[in-house]
Length: 353
Ligand SMILES: C=C1C[C@]23C[C@@]1(O)CC[C@H]2[C@@]12CC[C@H](O)[C@@](C)(C(=O)O1)[C@H]2[C@@H]3C(=O)O
Ligand SMILES: O=C(O)CCC(=O)C(=O)O
Ligand SMILES: [Fe+2]
Image 1 (cartoon, protein in one colour):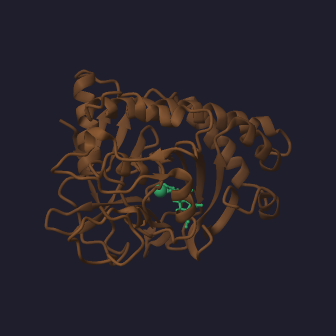
Image 2: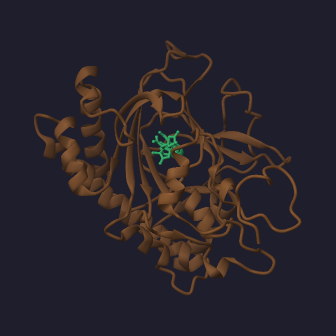
């Protein structure tokens, strides 16, 4: 059994909020007290039904996260003109309020970095002028630890899904030319907060799914993350994910949904800002190499579950995603249309089989 807890999203958060979903936040103990087969089964279940889970006893040393938090907080505390030297986000680098290049805005500032240590070292020169290696080492050590966690999870998924080659998912991420990113977000205390009395929330980071394979998120003790879950009455509802700085929140990205032919679902999430304390988060986005072809794993394609998405490369998917708004359901553009299918979007440029 996967332990589960839930908190309702604040009713003032957004019109889409329709109270609390019946089932909540799946929590998985990575130390596998009930054995590896049970653990891999729990993960597949959580990802198939919810698209995410909270990982506890994950093995990432607290000092590794604390070191990244300290290096990030030191950067965000710098004067605006100094931070701008690490920007603009093109799409990597420092950014403030503006997300992507299609008009999305949020109440945050951020750094998006490629995880290649050499790229981090180059960027660190503009991030920590006094001691660039202080920043780059904190990031590199953190990335190593969370990549290891991501790969453990992908191997367990490979086993739980009954793949002939269970390590095939983690290999997509460990390749030297992997396009994985790390993003560090700083949500300043919200104008919506008023001396501890909660007023209407403002959008910190708008609704979206993550495009990569897997996202590994950790934040400080400030709430804000919400996930869109079925409410059991045929609708979706925003569910507040209570902050837990000792845990990691793991979510399925669009590529993992495509690789598993829709069995694992890429979850829609957002951050609402309404606190008097800054929220600091770091997300590792595990991605394949740009040339990697993303195609449903053969074990997930059956007569009852025909191929849902046409094969595409990560480079092709990325190019498309950067032309779209944050909230766009971009994986839909890669859907295969079965002959006889009619309905929304059937006239768009999609494959037919
Ligand atoms: C509006 C956008 C921002 C984003 C690129 C995009 O065009 C659509 C996907 C967005 C997203 C969401 C998850 C990650 O935070 C991110 C880094 C990513 O890979 O896809 C962001 C992109 C971004 O901020 O550049
Ligand atoms: O900052 C957070 O907690 C989540 C942000 C997020 O979803 C993202 O950066 O993709
Ligand atoms: Fe996200």
